[in-house]
Length: 144
Length: 144
DNA sequence: CATAAATCGGACAAAACTATCCGATTAAAA
DNA sequence: TTTTAATCGGATAGTTTTGTCCGATTTATG
Ligand code: FES
Ligand code: FES
Image (cartoon, rainbow over all chains, first blue to last red; front, side, top):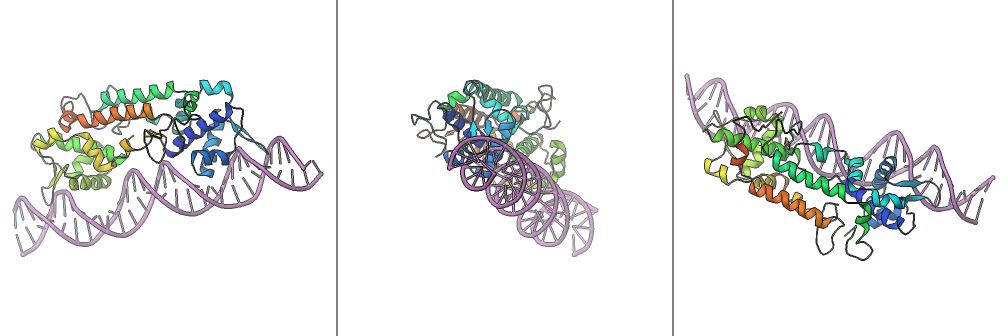
């Protein structure tokens, strides 16, 4: 569904959000440990998210990553997916035709578009804040 | 969503079904042309589908691929996807946790499982025969 | 039987994705 | 001011997916 990079990106952002809500800035190392991801690869993804203004990075000693508290509520999963995987999830044809277009649709177009829209809606309606909701109380997890 | 191999596999199977309904056996070359796919790669995928008893292959001169007419109505997209991509679409966690499990779910588990089930239902309920329905009359297409 | 037309199957090549390494840069703290 | 802890960014390596090549095999046909 999503690329590995995108999966790590969502998990990392969620962990950063969780800690930022309590005023804690977190280091790359801590993030990678808490979401069980390869450190250097996670660094690359966080650079990308930082450039896309999704997370804020602070260099130097006592630096790390954080997300502005006001942003946590406004940031939707769709923005993270957009930044990492682009729009290929939404835009592409389910059967790989060069374009997905209702004027010249593939045989699964109607059914596929419906499912894809559900996914899109879900991503656009889910905020980072919601993502953090169950974590502290052990209802949800970022690693297994 | 699906791998390229799976996309080609579904398109190829659909084209073979369409022609088989009219009693025509089709060659690899014709299939690749009609679905706009790389010939040699398509050959590999058809071998796999043949081993999985989804298409029937006939070697030698005047050989090619066909699908038993009775099978066309019974074969579902889910069987093709299973043969090529396995169960990773259904089984995996949307955020890449090692397992998708309601006992220790990721933050999107509930929403994700719902969408994934819709996709599963769609694949299990769509037969190859349905796939061919709009092709002859130009309502749907296998290439663009 | 000889030839031609087709799939089969193994090896190989290219591209994309995932992951690592390390020096450069930055900034807090001693 | 020096040290230390951190991100940045470019180069590189490994893995998977996608795609190609070609000889072997099979079978219809003349
Ligand atoms: S044309 Fe295939 S999904 Fe729209
Ligand atoms: S645990 Fe992540 S989708 Fe089920």
